[in-house]
Image (cartoon, rainbow, N blue to C red):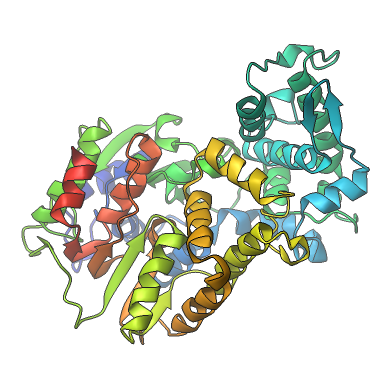
Length: 494
């Protein structure tokens, strides 16, 4: 075994590269900026006689890896792997979006009342769809009552108080919630069958449907000596199950502290898989100042392995140089919009990472929902609310940061909302290379880095691990300058 002369691994990387020769499963806990992709590339180049498969959860990572890895490594997304076998059979089924109205009409769902308690047909349809999603993320072979929509059950409990249910009683439901879950379960079973039917022209399928079917087929991935799963902390049980059936070496790399997609059913793979655990803690992205700040978040999460900032990088905590391009990160899209308005007034060129048209349409839908113009509520997630009051109620109960910020935005600008949104949309028509300021929510910024990063002030709720994970990701996107004001730091880390 010999390393290419152009690569000089750190001691941590060398230990991992050597361990890969064992052909045993490896778990690599790679903290922010510690060269996880470079380490995987070193493994690939050190063993050129072994053919490997690199898997990622999103297209951007897959394309980045494809440009870096040697030819004996195939780079695919997990969905792409499933698409080549099953997803390709669905054609137009994947082109349309499924919404609650389709489900209600297709299965003739009716409102349900029991005493003073009420659940609309749309709510039942939404709960059925949630059950199908939860099932797709799981390792189960069929939908079960345990896949019930916790989100909507919590909303009903919050609305009516003192509600109870027992999943073992669904065959003979007695309480309101038992009836609600039972109805949702029945429709979820029918919905799954319809979505899984490639010849069904009424109910569209989703990408998670064919991935679930792929997992259920217990595939054997042939032609490789090992598989590398990047961003393993963002995998769900279904994805992990696919890999668990393979009789070749698996190398899982990720950072549990960057797990920010729990709402998609992801779990921390690092805690679910048996294998030798190795750490990457030396950051190549930023210096000690940023590492020190990020470590405060890691310590609050109970992490014992902490970041080591690169002594060769002069990182600072302070104001960005606004004469030079910089990235602006926010917790929510509404937070970004507030900053974009200021930048637009200053004549700055702005780039928005993500689908700006889709986000604008979502805010417009919220405005029309408030104006009681339901025919113009085009956002599928907002279509399930029959009134602004019901939207407010669910956002409050679910503590959805994005929705609550959107509500504040709409209520702040009132009748000016549409014209404000148009200004924001026009301000974001520049490419990333043209822009003075690159804007993104933390979820869109994950995996990226910039020399200068400024944080918006909507990172406030640090009571949950998920919010701390989001802040940790935000703090570690900067290489040289992190604009995180002192009073803001104190409020976060007090």
